[in-house]
Amino acid sequence: MRVVITGAAGFIGSHLSETLLEGGHSVVGIDNLLTGDLNNIAHLRDQDFQFIKHDVTHYIDVSGPVDLVLHWASPASPVDYLEWPIPTLKVGALGTHNALGLAKAKAARFVLASTSEVYGDPLEHPQKESYWGNVNPIGPRGVYDEAKRFAEAITVAYHRYHGLDAKIIRIFNTYGPRMRINDGRAVPTFIAQALRGEDVTIFGNGSQTRSFCYITDLVRGILALAQSDVNDPVNVGNPNEMSIEAIARTIIQMTGSASQLIFKPLPTDDPKVRQPDITRARTLLTWEPRVSLEEGLASTIAYFRTKI
Image (cartoon, rainbow, N blue to C red; front, side, top):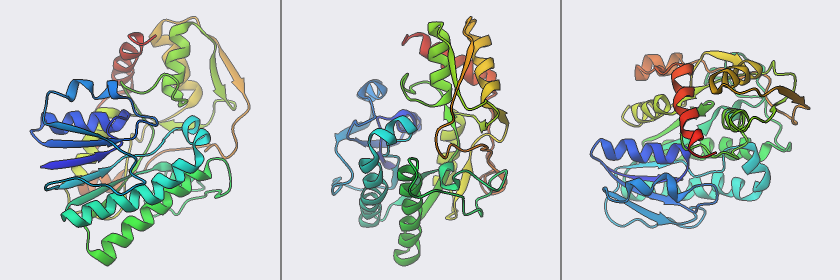
């Protein structure tokens, strides 16, 4: 296949590019480098990989045939979308429209990177794909949540109206090498603080839960969905739920750090629980996570040791 990946220099986009190239496919990576990093894809340059620096909120022009479009362009952490609220909304709306237009013009399949954040601070637990969510559209997190909800709506509209083979993956918390140290999300923040011997900062009382999926498991799920005939949204994540305090203490122990926990106020609209129901992924894609938390954290900590 010849695959176009928007957001290719980002954490997930770079792993997708790498895995596809290892599978013998050709990749065209597009990124405006707002949050992406060329270092993530530097090792791909001598392979069948073409990089285009471009903002996908403007028309996307790719010459030649395209078989698959993976739309991963977007700021994805609270640190980023609170700093760039309007670009986040624009890439969810205009960027998705342009990526869909490319897929339609090339008669390519399309996969949208959506998010568990479409469920907001959920009143249903665990979250099934049938749940419509509990989102504050005008809260500080609304710029990301609603950008992704709009992206899902226009993706489904292209599928229904144009007959585009379009798919939606709802990604739950994912971690692994190539996350940014200043990403702002729990795992990279806790690892960086622990390796520096700093206090590990928990927002809230630490009882809020997340479900952490290792990057290689996520990539397998993305590609399984891309190759399937499924067009309904699919949750992909690790259903093993744990508290934020528990993941922080695990990281402190695994790094051998003497860091102590400190607690700060919980940000506005921060979800209290997050756990995917992956019944649909298991039954339709025969997918489920394989990498244990300890194994995934060991690889991630080893990567961060090279950066700190």
